[in-house]
Length: 247
Ligand code: GLN
Image 1 (spheres, protein in one colour):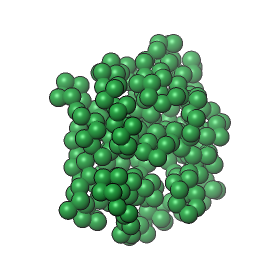
Image 2 (cartoon, protein in one colour):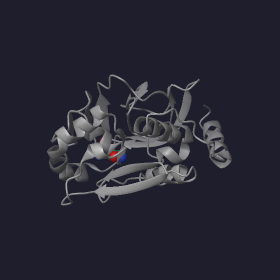
Image 3 (tube, helix red, strand yellow):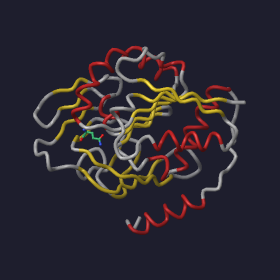
Image 4 (tube, protein in one colour):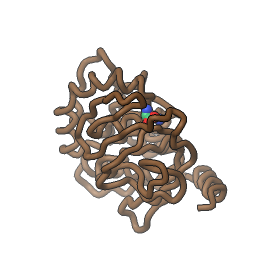
């Protein structure tokens, strides 16, 4: 039986707007295809993980306060994480975690939270606490399938991210990396870093399957055709959302 191992970072601190749902969706979509899914978690005080021994590393969103607390712990693993990214481990990073993998996050009071500096972007919060990018968001994403796919989510961030040299998607509706931006997130084959909660994967089966296929092909060194699942309900929900947002 094939197996995929997921490492869930700081589940007690980074879990806004149902981000854990992403892991539940991955597990469901793997088990429906007879792939075993192992989920380990790591938080402050736990035994240090070997990031390269996992297939997927996941971290969700968090408020500035949680980000400040865990940043000191996270930077201890900078080299280990960098090696895992280079080894091709898949990283799915949502909102607060997306920010922490960049150069730095500058909070509302001007305080700097150091990032892992693994990716080239940086994030600065707007001084006015009330000004946040909040609402539904639709992207056009190129997952290197036959055609671009629409990715639907929900964003809620004060941080404005700049310098993402390879964005996750083109914004069709919503804000993106900063107010009125045309681009959202950061993407390279084995990394999706994005502001999209939702949770992201429950609304976007294609993205889930992109991750599962990538991980299986990397681990087992063979071409993988994933058995299609019955996504009728998800498709209906997506159609409804896209109609509502006129996209
Ligand atoms: N604290 C960050 C911001 O507001 C991230 C918020 C989040 O993860 N939703 O920009």
